[in-house]
Amino acid sequence: MRQTVLEETFPGMKDIPKEKCGIALVPAAGISMGVLDIMKIAVQSAFGEEALLVKGEEGEGWAGFSGPGGQVPASDLIRQLAPLRRAFDRVLGVVDTGLSHPGVNHVFGFTDPESRVSVMSLYHLGRKGEAPAKIARRASKTAIHELGHSYGLRHCKDHRCVMFFSFNLTDTDYKDSGFCERCGKELSMRLKSDVHKRKEVC
Image (tube, rainbow, N blue to C red; front, top):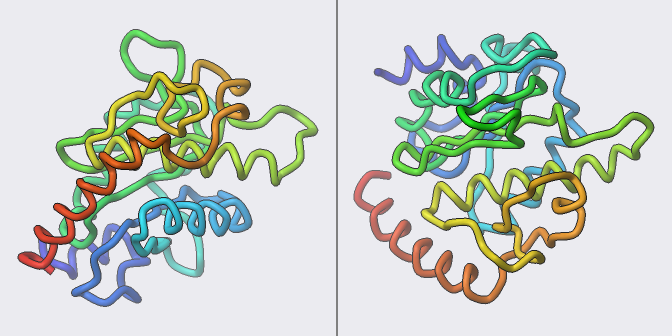
């Protein structure tokens, strides 16, 4: 798929240099820019990679993600985001709909490590009346967790590590936004390998 076709599907691509690599954050229409800005900073800090927002025309989110409420198969959104991998090392879609996956009632996020494409939902990350800052912290941890999977990291047994699997919001609130020593070392090795491979394609 050529760059021009990508720009037709993701209008926000037109302002991004063609040689740009990094992490694409693709928000649904209506996602709070305040939450996105906090997520972007957290992601850049966690991985040392530039994160860029890929939005639609006039700042609107990609239309393919609109429609709050209900459940959307995470794998369907992964497929819709996959074309962006031609321009970015990794892609993370951020939606406000519930995400489903076979065998579970709902998921906070889902990643296909092979394609390096992730999707996460804000739908279950906030309770009525909770402070936006608290929801943004949860969203940032979820984003880092899912992107961690895109680097090949698995779930961690350390409840404080961001790679710990969150069964509920209590787990998400308890864990840190950073990696434990073991996961941090593994990520560092994978980042070094990634830099080497990127020089061959960027």
